[in-house]
Amino acid sequence: MKSVPFLDLGAVNGLIRNELDAAFRRVLDSGWFIMGPELEAFEAEFAEYSGVKHCIGVGNGLEALHLLLRAYGVGPGDEVIVPSNTFIATWLAVSECGATPVAVEPNPLTHNIEAAAIEQAITPRTRAIMPVHLYGQPADMDPINALAGKHGLVVIEDAAQAQGALYKGRRAGSLGNAAGTSFYPGKNLGALGDGGAVLTSDDKIADEVRRLRNYGSQVKYQHDVAGYNSRLDELQAAFLRVKLSVLDGWNDRRREIAGRYTRLLEGKGFELPFVPDYADPVWHLFVIRHARRDALRDHLAKHGVNTVIHYPIPPHRQACYAAYAGQQFPLAEQLAAEVLSLPMSPVMSDEEVDRVVDVLACFDPRA
Ligand SMILES: *Cc1c(COP(=O)(O)O)cnc(C)c1O
Image (cartoon, rainbow, N blue to C red; front, top):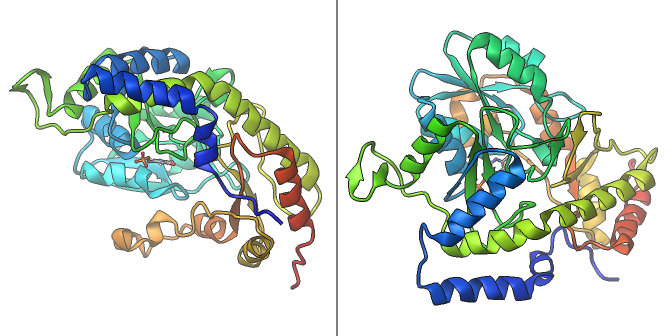
């Protein structure tokens, strides 16, 4: 029997092959590859889509978060609150500015951090809160913003997995003071290489990030701050304009697939994703939980169903964060041991969903 891929990016991009080809030729013929009309157009289009004043294209998602923290003046001695169960880039962005990531355990149902737990972690050194809209589901942002207001903190969304997701009708990326997002090829809005963006309606922060991404310069060969080279190139911007035009349709297909999984798997012994009333997720990943996750994953693989674990080792257990080895984040560790991401992509067919469900149904949890 044919196997079910986790994500077939060749097939996904094949749906818009002609449009991507045309974008490639347009940039090739223009002879202009960095900081040109494609980037400007994409930035305007994605800012409007996201419901913010400014989009600033940068090199990748990690840089988007890092440049934002720099723009807010976060540095050595400062603390930034991050989830204990996120992709490591959220933490690395904080470490890159010399600040300290302070981890907070998530809500066990939504896998996102919440205001009550965040408040416990606030100290006089706290400067910012970085909620992650994990798996494409927005965190509960209103209480987080209220808490930040009370303590004079900045809220920076890690929106890398949530392009198009809605929180009470508002887009992820427009829900805090600013957001960083990623166009890594596997993301819902994925480029054909690395890419990322900062989203904000704050004019000053937008200017600062524009400067930082381009050697700290706004006027050519005049350098006000020691900046970086972190730009979204013309080719990726042109590809992303094509991708943005199909994003809503592709997210809708992800919603259908998630709905089908949920209907067919309910009551079958797997912990399914929990969606609160305030959230309209875009299902970057469809993540289930099971106490015997590794056996389940082997069973699926044996029957041709490819899955991925997001993420197998939490940041505080990584060698690069050895200083955190003494801290306890039991929920992050339990999630790392129990989560499993099922195949999910806009090209997945109903028949493939049904195959995954059938293979899951014949898993013997005692085996
Ligand atoms: C992908 C991702 C990033 C980093 O994006 P890159 O473009 O790969 O640097 C950051 N945070 C989260 C939650 C991500 O999923």
